[in-house]
Image (cartoon, rainbow, N blue to C red; front, side):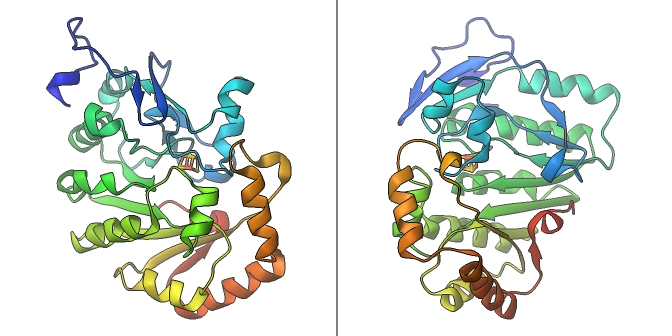
Length: 286
Ligand code: SF4
């Protein structure tokens, strides 16, 4: 934990940042940190979300629709709530260690928010999990910040880092994921994770229109990663957050994005990529 920003118990904590980049940052007391999973993630025991909201603001993000109020939903990508007592809550679990439990971090945010660089909340959680629990952990991110924690990640007995990459086109990426790190830095990061000896996976979830599917697949394989998961993107006008929605829908139209196009790309991916899991079964716990 960064001693400059020890959120857990020190009343004299230095002033906390309330804005980072385009995002408003708020600090909240959560009632729990582990959530029993259901639906798509039901094969895991728990999901763990150190933040709510997400600075990456993907246009299609389903988590946006879980927002408590319309303003938060409309401003998805522009706010992050820090669960400042996350580590305190997790420490309460020491009495009953989570041996062998499967954890997914995270289901409704990206654990490596830009503010994480200062707060090191996820890093504290990883240290706690390592020392007191033998969990089976999957980390899902779009951020290269995950490489900061390589020293901890490589100590887990069962762990996988999933890096999401949804297209080979920066035009598409900017329309659908305007506030996310570029594809290039994500690929570099997952390559670094893989080279550190950590089990790695690239998740094409959801798969967006792709310019050169075969070259795209080859660039993914060139990272050294051997596991992949793919999931179709089902556009639905009501299921886009505000912002670049219209531009994104127009690009889908221009790319003739439909089931047939997805099937065409899927077939190429199946030819090129080893260990390609599809949809929910692809996300099964490791
Ligand atoms: S990174 Fe994940 S949680 Fe964040 S906006 Fe994108 S899809 Fe949603």
